[in-house]
Image 1 (tube, rainbow, N blue to C red):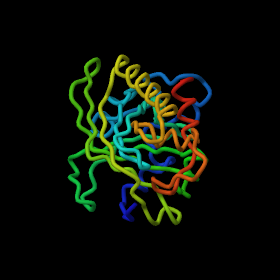
Image 2: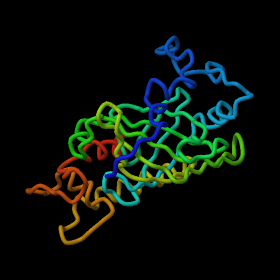
Image 3: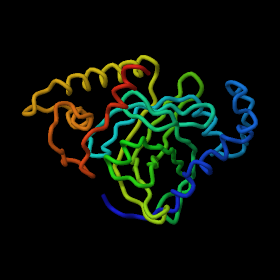
Image 4: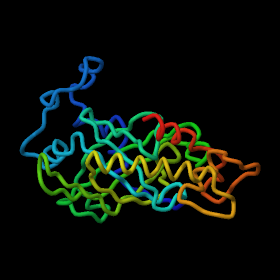
Amino acid sequence: HGTSSRAWVGAALPAQAATRLGQGQRQLAGVGPLRSTAIQFDATSVVDVTEEKLLGTTLKLTASVFGFPDFPFLVELTKEGRARFYGGMVSKEPGYWCVEQGNRDDGERPDDLYLEFTQPLTERYVKSFTIPGGKCIWRGKLNIKGGPGNLMVNLDGGIVVSERNDGKDLVREGVFRGVSVDEQAIQETRAKNKEAFERALTTPKGESTGFKTPARIAGAGIRRPQRQLAGGQKKELKDADTDLEDD
């Protein structure tokens, strides 16, 4: 963990991150799926044009976060402006996503675009990883090629932070990268994660798998506290296990 302070985090808070994609959403809530014309985008704004391109995109993220090295999972950028975590990672509820221009004050180029999304954490994640703010904020540099039908999205240099002291301080929780995936890749990712998780539950202590730590967090055969990761996690991925099986 390291403490830092970045102005962009304020823009990634749920109420603010949903501003563009959420125009008129409150009136439409409960009416059914949004039509593509429900959200008005400014064709002269590179941010709006990019957000419109990303609607409905699913990303495969590979993150070193919460102590898990190179941990793969999926995030869907829904047409309602929500970020749905699944296929290996869970959230208390869908977060929010938006596109932002680079912040010169943070050493970024204003011409570069960044994807930001929030992850409301489950109670067990909050306790296991000691995140009193209850939320993580993800931000990565966008690289988009192609258009409808052949859109290719890459996220590079991603950083995951959590808030402390009512947002005054930030703690770096990890890093990530990402790529857009089609339905076949989505199913492959979910299947591999489910298999790895189930294998971890039956792996002897002396061996290791990519899901060994999540299995320990889930409480699989562990009778003493495990403090290998930040925060001394004990049990968690019961949520992720359910997600992998039922989602």
